[in-house]
Length: 292
Image: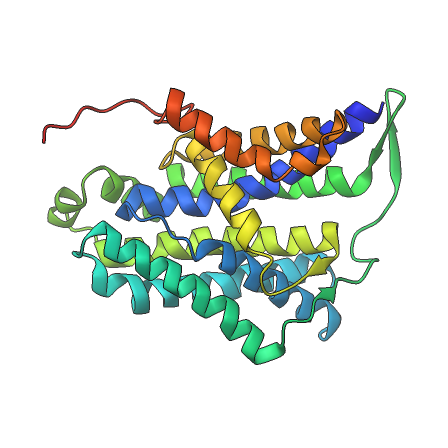
C-alpha cells in the first residue's frame, strides 16, 4: 500500500520534472543551447501563481493561465535580450550567458521581494483520499498528474498539428533550409522559448500547490533534475523529456520507499552519470557520427 502511494507521488513529481524538462529539450532541439536559466523561469512562475491566488484571490486554473502567460513573455524577453545577440557565438559563450541570466533572475527576485519563503494557501486544491481497488491515493497527486498530462498532450498537438509546430520542427532539422523556405527563424525560436517557459510556469504553480513552500532559489534543484530528465530521455526529443521526467520521479519515489530518502536528490545525478557513461544519447536518442 505504502509503495503504491509512493509510486503515485513519484509519478506526480515526475510529471512536474517532465514539464520543466520539455523547455530544456525544445530549446536545445532548436538552437542547441542548454538554457540553465529555465529553472528560474519555473521559480518565477511559482511566484506569479502565488500572487495571483493570494492577492487577486483567483482559483487554481486562472492562476495557472496567468502564470503561463507571464512566463511565456518572460521567456521571450530572455531570448531576445540575452541569447539572440549570441546566436552565432560559440556554445560556451551562450552557456556562460545562461548561467549569468540564471543568477540575475535569482538575485533580482531576492532584491525585489527579499529572500523569505512564501506558503501557498492550503485550500487551493482539494485534499481528499480516493480509494481505488482498495488503495488510498491522494486526490492532489491524481489532479496534478491529470493537469500535467493534459499540458503534454496540448504540446504534442501544437508541435505536430499547428503551423508554428511545423516551423519548429523544420528549424530544428535544418535552420538554413527553413529560412530559404520562407520560415521566420527568429520568430520560431522566440515561440519555442515562449512555449517552453509557459510549461515551466505551469510546473511552478503545480509545484507550489503541492509542496506549499516557495522561495527565490527553489528553481535550482528542480531545474537541474529536469535537465537530468531531459538527458535521460534524449536531449532535444520531446517524448524523451516526458518519459525521462516520469521515470526520474518514480526512481526518486522508490529510493524514498526503501528508506534512503537522504539519497533522494543525489540519485538524480547518479542517473546522469550512468546515462552519460552507458547511453550518452539518452533512452530515445540515436548515436550520430560526426566527421571532425
